[in-house]
Image (cartoon, rainbow, N blue to C red):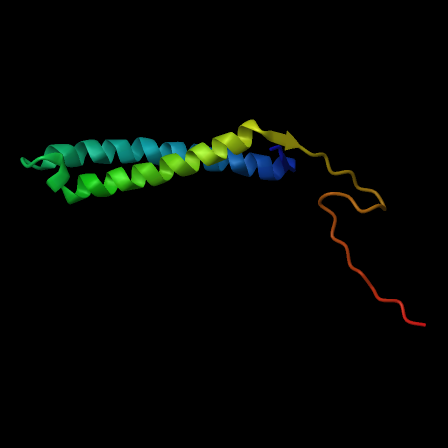
Length: 96
């Protein structure tokens, strides 16, 4: 399925992908710290488990956005007097 984006929306998608990737990197560091915090096994460590859940959530969202980016098609908006993508249109009802 092709996703159609105006340039500004595509750039926002790329920025969001970078935010998610950065969040995953930071979460991985946090998870590593939590793994060293407990003498217990990893499954008894709430901080580790919470970071793991966050990692899964971010990873799923990142995968969705990357797939969207890979199938993206940029659409050019042309200012004209015709209705086009990105135009705002107001309908007025004509009465006799």
